[in-house]
Length: 115
Length: 116
Image (cartoon, rainbow over all chains, first blue to last red; front, side, top):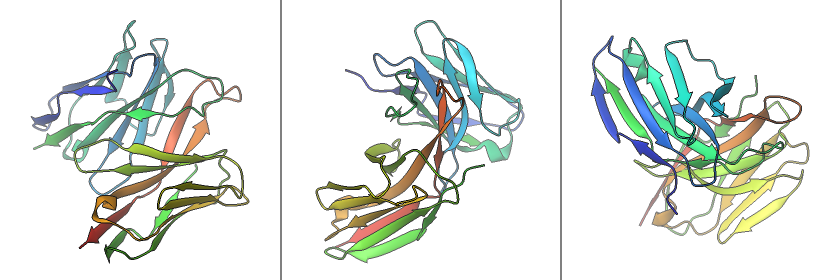
């Protein structure tokens, strides 16, 4: 059983460019969350998708957008990249539940470097 | 806004020593989770504590949830080089009263280095 997978593993972009990161959730999971982890810090919540809709959003600008597909996979898009967007982008998945207590499984992340 | 602060930020110890990492908040959390993250990988869940005052043990790791559910600690006995990594505490924030969505608020992290 494959866990959460993310692609690409590493990415280098220049300021002003756009980037798309991809995530496939763990089998049986339908809720996907994205987190940004700057170097030396804890992950920061970007947004969460369930039933192809953004359900909750953290304190990130509109340059950060996402999408969830019918097969539960997800994309994170970042427009007009800034140097400060350089970070490890983590995808986490869990099964939907009304309690929100379920374990979230994290992927290995995509390391984005903006030059 | 719920915040989680961890201390210390960095810890470098020798194999065999004991250590404690703290995770504190001014907010009440329904549960707290502890993760370990190694370079190039995503965080891996170690434990979830749910009940105030709860103590859970995972081999040489002991986790405690504060009585008021605002803080937690992780104690490692006889640390080994394999314990090296970034330790993160995290708490869920329910989006709605029904809990149909939730996010994890992570602590600032404690980077542990265990040397021979």
